[in-house]
Image 1: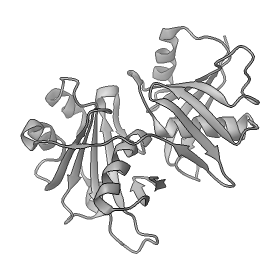
Image 2 (image 1 turned 60 degrees about the horizontal axis):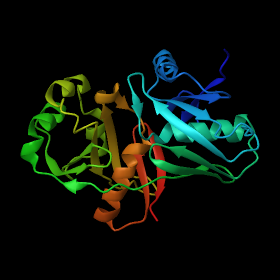
Image 3 (image 1 turned 180 degrees about the vertical axis):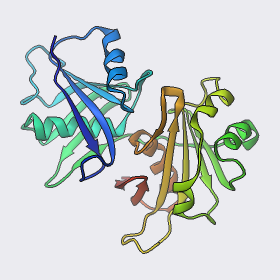
Image 4 (image 1 turned 135 degrees about the horizontal axis):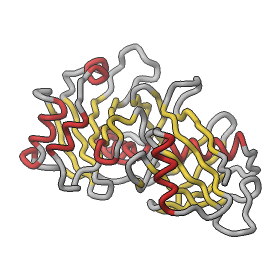
Length: 264
């Protein structure tokens, strides 16, 4: 059995930057356990599997496909950078003729639209509710020590915990913050938290346009110590920061990449 597999660096215009994802095109049904074995072999934060929905479909002409994502440890319900990588492979390598692609996923139908010089993803927004710090004190302390925290939110839809650092910190502090992700598994093993978002309000810092917020994402619960850039975390981040800043369009930094969010 031969399977075409591509590796694409998402959220960047330079090779070996951004967030790499493997993309596997499935002409035929794949044994269920093979998805995880291939993802483990690729050993990237996510491996995407694009499948045809009907026997007459083909990767060049069809506009709707099934899409699943696997980390080296498990299947995940949503992955932004691997979706972007999947669309890029279909648009630029397979030469799909459509301007918009639809993906049927565990998180519903997602769309990727080709523009003149980019790909625009249409993703859901998930609210994050205020959370009593005493419920997650040990987890936060293990993750960031005595770092000052300004806000704590929890997204039940995604099982992600959002920790906003004090506005007194700057981007370099967040980028250099030491987080031992594997230690988080010892503190939180109930299944309630599957991802930790650490975020910070943006500052001008000479960048034009200025960044609205910064973030880092840790998910050792699904086998990813730190994900360089993650679209699934931004389904929570964009909802939160849109409310905090009163903005629909945001310019954000998720080390090491930069992206534009249109929350409309």
